[in-house]
Image (tube, each protein chain N blue to C red):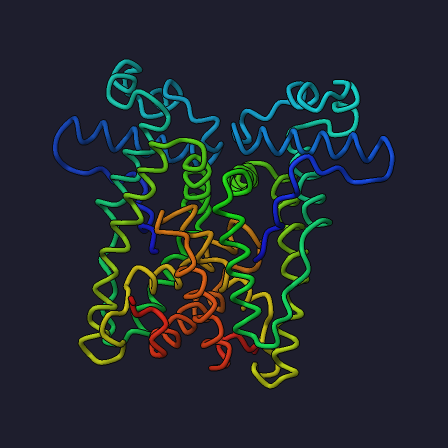
Length: 205
Length: 205
């Protein structure tokens, strides 16, 4: 599924002081997560880096997992809309390229790896990650629905299964095999998914 | 890619005291990893659980990452040979079912999740995991080579890309989406890969 694009450096959402504090804290948390991983995520260090009072951070986010949860809620809120290229192959290739771009981005790639690691041993981090992927899977499901309407995909095609098939091999390369995570991998995985869609592999029984 | 099957409980490789010590230590390390995750992996606790001298464990494995490294070397050594059902779909379905069985096994699933988490923040754990997946990708590549010889797959089909496409969606469900990891997911992912293979999607340029 497609992660969010990196927010523009130093971007600050409008909405007054609370929103500015949240933006600063989440950016500092994301930086620390990307740089040192979940194990080293420290609320006091985040507060210092964000130039926000320690008590504010402890009161509002409570734990490192609380920070990751809010970080991924924020990423889900900010994440990009699905592509609409007019063809399923075009849309799924755009999805695969976005995932590849995000996972190979020095900051975002490390951030996702750290969050995935956190999710394996912390339930609230896992819930936050699931929420993020749910949001993205739902957003991009529209591409599969459109393909069904265009007659490119059989009725009953499961959008989540299709989108998982597109991005899973890219995460697999980053996390497991270490095989190259490049445009060849992205286009291959979009092509494989589209071929299987046409064959009706992803139709729900 | 196909993880190893769980070793039989209490299984001990022959080969004298050194081998028995290694088996006991790796089993204790695997138990702790599965139960508490990488962050809690402690050499002294492993030594106690394995009923092996602390100094032996510190001398031979040095760090938690050293234990994970040897654990995955051992799993690669013990892992099952590839299937040989006579058809690519049969072989890839067997692979997908083995991955699913392993990832849904209470002990093995947690063990893989913990090792994947460790690999995101520890280079030697990452190297150990890559070595394990290399071994399994190489072992199961024979199924794709056989399919090329039988004319089921076009010449130049990349076995690693095919096998990654089969197991990646299963790891994705476990680590990211939380979608059901069941026989439907396994057969779907084998079918999708075979369809894409026939279409030449995985042929190296």
